[in-house]
Image (tube, rainbow, N blue to C red; front, side, top):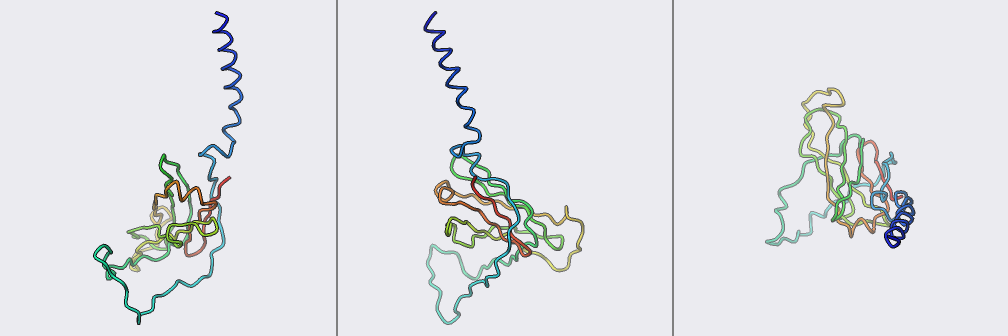
Length: 171
């Protein structure tokens, strides 16, 4: 009976000391906080030299199949949802016109963080012959999986839109 009481008291003391786990940096659910607006960089996109031949392989996609998406006007939401093997970036944005489709998050840094910043662009194919409509009908969403190895080297996740960017950082 005495050993049961000692074990019960000891386990109670140990479990009561775990209250700081919720706010700890070790807790994976605290790795990224809420997103906030960020300024848009004014960098020009890199172009390829048409005089140099592009290397092709049987394992690469056909280069003639190009993605025709353009930047979504405004990025309104950025959330990093933790999974056992990494995280899922869930992004929402608002386009200028209705009818946008084929929404994608394209990596600006080839899927690797540069100086701790992992940068993506929110793009969609946006037809010009549609109406404006309200915000709900122009809202688009996209997601992208990021592995644990990449997230461990990432301090900030940044998603760029045409009128601004949104970032979220580790706590």
